[in-house]
Length: 301
Image (tube, rainbow, N blue to C red; front, top):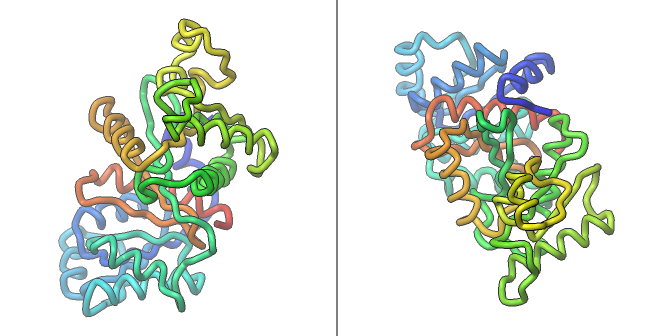
């Protein structure tokens, strides 16, 4: 079991050098996170951005020597960073100070982009001190209202990542408002269908999938017992599959802002893991996202 980010730090350091391509790197907090990753993880960054602004920030921060590629604008920087990953010069891509739509346009570029044919999905990890372990949430960042087929693909992406991280048999909670299948509540119908797909062997690698299941039961064995719900994963869920972007987003922000869990996130389904953070996230959170992506880089997307 991964007990926290410290476990991942040791694992990533032991895996050898990772190269990180940062698109539009001319941002102080992004560079602070990259510097932390270079020092703690031994990663080698390649920074793409507005040359003069970038070099000025690096000098002010006393940033260790690294490769810098100047670009006239953010779109050019993004495309150059994506091309770097596409060509195998870097194993992880990171978004810097650039609009997400412009960044993703480069990621999906038909000539040098990182398409694989898989759905792109967001996997968030949270270190919750009370639980003494990491828990994962998907998808609170990319897919707005996924269909049943898309939910299966999102789950497959996340399971591949967790298996690569060392989870031998991850426990998956397909979240809904309660444990009863109700034809009027599509999320419960989809949850039951996902469990049937798991029982039929549709997902690769060992795992346990339960649903429909409410958050309290997934987090608490006591809640399952009080509600008389038989569950193999109650109180031990590793991965929470949400029904929509709103559920995943709200759950993640509650964990980050109310429980003060350390959060990280990575985009899966491309040919390399992608760090896609918002400006509101802390340097620590950005560093943890780099850490998570570097660990995910140990498997082929």
